Image (cartoon, rainbow, N blue to C red; front, top):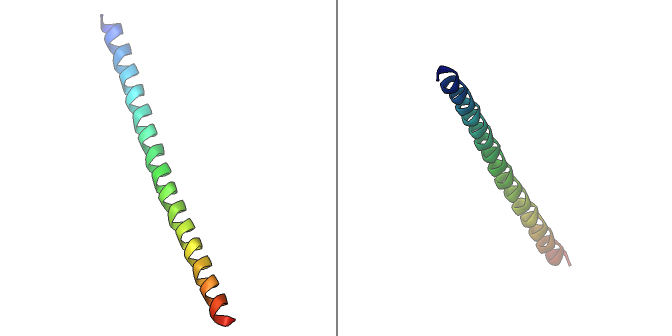
Length: 58
């Protein structure tokens, strides 16, 4: 009985560690996606500003 309880607790701790790692990865992916959207947004704005400058320059 004691062995099964200890193995169950070790399995549970491994599962919790796995869940924490997955949560960390998800947070990093969310941060990465928000960073990528900010980057693409700034690139889009730069292109917009560039096209405005080109149209004014003509």
